[in-house]
Image 1 (tube, rainbow, N blue to C red):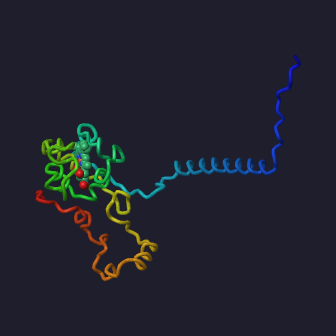
Image 2 (cartoon, rainbow, N blue to C red):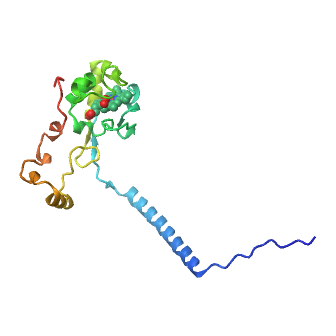
Image 3 (cartoon, rainbow, N blue to C red):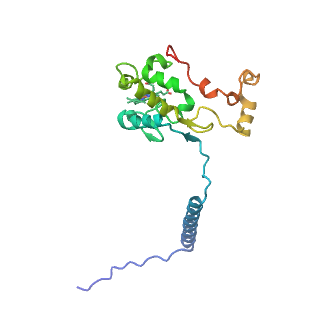
Length: 210
Ligand code: HEC
């Protein structure tokens, strides 16, 4: 039996294919060079690439609270802080908590969740999944509250309830065009000009001691 040649002749590369191949190769090479250059600049620059909008200053008590939060408390089953843990939905991402609420509010919430929260809680109230938190001793709860109160975020951060400090010409023009007339009568004040904005922005306590 004579052996038949099985080699299939490849069709010649068309000019258009050649151009696409070359363009792709140039594009990939430039992308790799640009990435390398960016990484080099990033490593050698002492300026942060993005504005730093979170700020943590932990007292020794707050550090202890952090330990309780991450190790003993099972808090991270439902919560996230310092970008670590789970985020089960609204109210459970605690980054920026110290900007949103005051220390007293947090402490009261941990001890008396249903009395402090503006409505019934999902998990913290008596008999619910996180009811164990309120049974901790006052010292530990105070430490956890100190930790959470230290999780502050500057205005404009995704976890800050306070809008960015600078003006946005785009937002201004949208407000001018579309906002209801009542917005422009001076009835609403710029919350950023209020020095107590962080505390004022905390939801009112209901029955909880201040
Ligand atoms: C089983 C899930 C779960 C666990 C465990 C849990 N939490 Fe919560 N936590 C929630 C939910 C849900 C909310 C929102 C309020 C609600 O509906 O209970 C909340 C709210 C809070 C708030 C108020 C946030 C705000 O500003 O409205 C604080 C503070 C808090 N938790 C701290 C803790 C700490 C500290 C621990 C651990 C010792 C803990 N939680 C454990 C589910 C949980």
